[in-house]
Image (cartoon, rainbow, N blue to C red; front, side, top):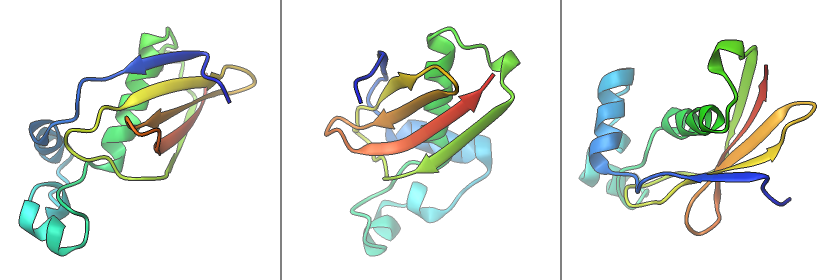
Length: 117
């Protein structure tokens, strides 16, 4: 499906992920301990799925969809995001629901989002 609109974010950083640990209170070691994440088979630290979902919500705001009118937001987590990834949100549909997804620079879908205003 072709995107109606696209919004590209700055490259994901370790600092941004660590800031999300602080803000969310989620200190799972896979998000901040490089050695632990490698030992867990992840190749290094990964971003929180909720951080990726938050980026999708930010894109919705950028596209003019008001969070104040949000009635429902559903997300399906599909893949992981890592420091250095350049994530983009793609608006896929606006009726009957708003659908978008966040993909990485390789085109892998990180999270899909469906929202109702």
